[in-house]
Length: 100
Length: 100
DNA sequence: CAAATCCATAAGGTCGATCTAATATAAGAA
DNA sequence: TTCTTATATTAGATCGACCTTATGGATTTG
Image (cartoon, rainbow over all chains, first blue to last red; front, side, top):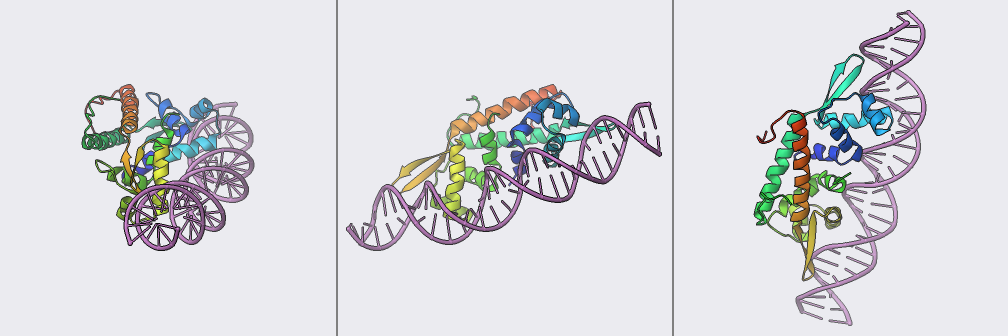
């Protein structure tokens, strides 16, 4: 089933928050750990989930790693949902052009 | 965090399949059980998850219950993702008007 | 080099999701 | 009413997600 890992990755409030925090602003693990007031191992574990889902990437910067969003994957997931639910609403006799 | 239950509901292949199967075609628990070759209790349990997330609804029809998609909730979730990621991609300097 | 910093990962425990098997409830059918 | 069908729900077991603690590897600094 498509995008199962991506949905699972989104199904956790901290991981949603991480994705929000990375909008337009790559951050290190320490930055994120401080911002969300959690432990460093927990942050690394959640970042691994997001990495395995392809939603974020990391770039070494000195002794740190700069985490950033993976636009391609996020956009692919968005497109999938868009097409999927547009089709759904069409079959239900709705007009998907007006947002609810 | 918004839509956490909805994302969790989508993070299971059977539940994704149920939503697909209900597109334009309300079905009974037995219909769905036969189609996905699973047990009836498992199907009812997953339908409960989808009901609690507001993604499906049920209408009594004789001794059965006809399950159907909840367009409003699906559309609300789609709109949330659309707005959220449109903002994300904008901050990343992308043009979200072209689908990937 | 040694020490400190940054991050990943492993081990251990807890809790919740999921499945199976059994039972309860409700609605037709005879 | 009695029997069958359809669905929900419970109890029990298993498995995986998640958190804490501790440790390992890599990089920078002194």
